[in-house]
Amino acid sequence: MKRKRKQANQLLFFLSATIVLISFGACLKSKDNLILPTEEAVSVTFSLKLPGSHMGIKTYAISGDEVQEVDVLVFTVDDDGEKFSYHSIGKDIQIGDNPGKIDFTASLRRDENISNEYRLVVLLNVRQELNAYGINIGQTKTYFENNFIHTKEIPTDNWDGPLPMWGESDIITGVGSSTEITGIDLLRSMAGVDVINEADANFTLTEVIVFNSKKKGLIIPNSDSPSLPSFTAGDNETLEYNTVPLTPNELKNEIYLFEAAAGSESNPEDPDPNATALVIGGKFTSGPPDPDVTYYYRIDFRNDLGELMPLLRNNRYVINIKTANYDNGQDHFETPMEAFQERSLTPTAIAYKTDNRHNFVPIGRPSNRGRPAMREEIVPQGGSAIKYTITTTTSGENQ
Image 1 (tube, helix red, strand yellow):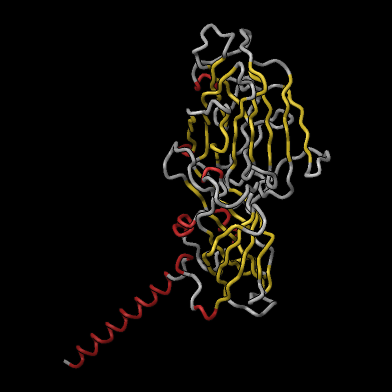
Image 2: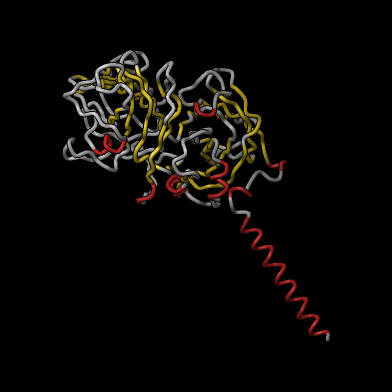
């Protein structure tokens, strides 16, 4: 009898130990690895710059600058690279002393050893995705960047919430009561697209359709070219914007897209069916046989050389319709799909870039890591029913 009781006690001890080990393993996930206990932590103030800053933090969600939640991931830095250590939640979020900046506090683990190096990654509006991902202690930052993916939950649903944003600090040494974090520029994880109609005397913009919009994207950029997760055939969708205000006749701060690679084509007459492209629809006041008919036109995203270009995060692409005249010699399409399957409006274009001081600088490609503020305007020339410009604004200018 005693032997059976001893065996039962041993079994109970083994089961208890197993439960403790399982519980400990679960705590290695980021959502459970917060600052504990409080006496080991120090409150650190962060001051960050919002991308393309508007006046203040409390703006419409669709503007992309509303901040609902802030998370800070701490990575250790050593000869073996940058590895995840712990996760802290930002608190006391408020407007900074200067417009376009936000301040918040986060508890970081005290470390008075200035030989220890850290990098802080700041994430906005992605806590649900972060908890679902469950980053492990020791996971490299490179692996995290390549695998932390935002996926739209509702297909074909237009974006209607705060946009995901990311930023990271320079390497810091130690963490103490005097530690403050400044100088982090936040980048949106998506590209914005506006369509503005300046030719409203003769043309009314009524619809904008986005073909081959991506349903998912990386939250953190891993290069200066499009940072793309692996895609499958079902990862494209069509977005429809059927309500365009009449006064002013434009669609602004409504279209937000994940990054997309440039399309490919050997002949503009044979457009890429897989490229991310717009189709605009509208009615002419005069000229067509029936002014009540809506006509559609494809617009590809092209650079100053006329080449298809990628959509990059933290960039805003403004399609500005300058003139619109119905011309019987031009192709006009009465359905969006017909327009998408035909060649894009591709007028000959010239381009220039200016820096913040309006000095001409060499033409290059915008960076999705959003360093210097640059502005590229592509100005069309030549005949077309719709004449337009494309302006690309990168981080640093109002978006």
